[in-house]
Image (cartoon, rainbow, N blue to C red; front, side, top):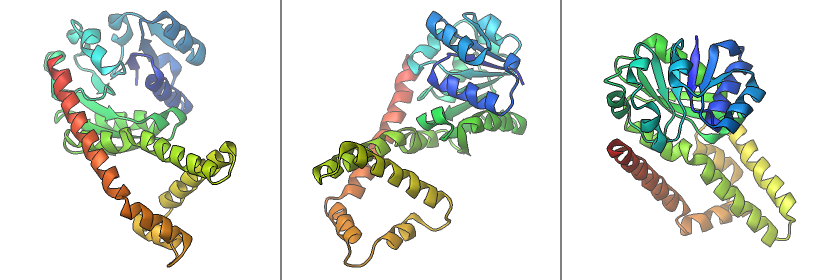
Amino acid sequence: MRIAFIGGGNMASAIIGGLMSHGHDPSRICVVEINAQQQQRIVEEFGITVTASIAEGIRNSEVVILAVKPQQLHAAISGAAQLFQGKLVISIAAGIRADDLSQWLDQHEFIIRAMPNTPALVGKGITGLYALPRVDVQQKERATAILEGVGAVVWVDEEAQLDAVTALSGCGPAYVFYFLEAMQQAGVELGLTADVAKQLAMQTFLGASCLAVQNDDAFSVLRARVTSKGGVTEQALLSMEQSDIRGAFIRAMHIANDRSREMGEIFKRA
């Protein structure tokens, strides 16, 4: 399939890299990008066609991926709605609802919203996907194939669930980095060097995640296996429970979910 990207930033580059690593013909990829430095970087990195013209960039495409910042999307596609007719549109612009995008594109019906996260930059991301009702099975399969190039994919049945996806996996890398910071700081306070504490923290997160991926048991079961009664881990976890770390973390995700929903309303009025 011929794929056009509107916007050539980091996430677009990650998806392009994923496509090419899975054998996609670079001659069937085009990027619409107005920034000259970005244009040069994309050409040098991927050797694909880059243009500043939407009309030229998406003319022969079957799939158009909207990869500009949410606050810039309306201006980027304004006046170009007729160019999208018959094409599958995949938007990775956070917060912009599919129905609003459909209105901007003169009631275009073949729209999929995607919520990837930043580990996609190293091929380890996960993307939540939602499709408008008229999107068919083949189009969904195309979207899945494209986004699987940068990690795993999950589909949700209701667009509102993408706010939860945003709160969990979209924001999730920041939560992990937050805990990594805290673990490193504690390690330093306990006498380790910053480099050793950083390595221990990173590898612990990586190893625990890999262990969870390869195991069907619930997280609570995996946690219990590390927690001996009366032992060191139990005391640490009891301290976290007394400080309501779990409750604070869950409340933070609810706040992120609410903010994601609010942003949808803001972009709708933009």
